[in-house]
Length: 365
Image (cartoon, rainbow, N blue to C red):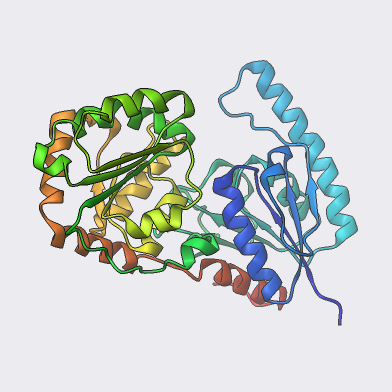
């Protein structure tokens, strides 16, 4: 019996690609044939076994000049024409959109060819692409509950955010002993590392010397900032300092950490939840629709962390909060346990289950 085909489509950023790959893998394990559709940025997609990848013309129109918006709209239109032909040729049983402007052409084609659609939303606010595409889809699989701006009448099911295999291998890792030192992990992604490089050293250097001597600091910084940040920390008296632009062992670093300081993207919060680690979250203030603040609020309201708005960051106040937390090991461990209670490690499998049910003709309430 011929396998039913599912198209998975998303943009080329890591924040979209990682969950899309996880969903594709879950669909393959469920017995579906999978085709991937992305944009030129999807060169980062290494692919999965037996997953053909098509790259469509697509560019964002948000935050660009008038000419840029016109060019982006033209490329989206051409991408939609490409997708119309591909979707008609492939005849998928379902299309899964995982957000980002590059998902628009394939999902629009599915709408026009009356093919069932599942959207996955990463954040606590429905993204602009998903908002544009949401009317008439069979279900929106959300990462958070509640998720704002889901249109009325469109079924929404909370499944969580699909995570990478390396993170899943560290699910609910035992909270480490802090007897020999305090592991502080700081990362902010490409858009967040600069703020942390500029602001955090001022706060960390205000900690009492005895506490600084316990800190094993691991911090992400942009390549151009690394030397400057290392120089600032050189005389801080920390137990150890590791500054890099990228960490390929993030699952291990999270599992070893006592406290994380980070932005509040959906992938970051998912990894904190699955590993079970407390965090001070400083949301990216320029995130679309302020979605990082909404993500962080849901995480912190559950007792898993502490929310600090970037505009409210004061070095002395932040140092005071960090000092209190470093002296309250039980509070940190409890917050990590609360983070773990929020985890949904089966998110990708649940999306695949939704697809299976829809392909079988079951209506999602």
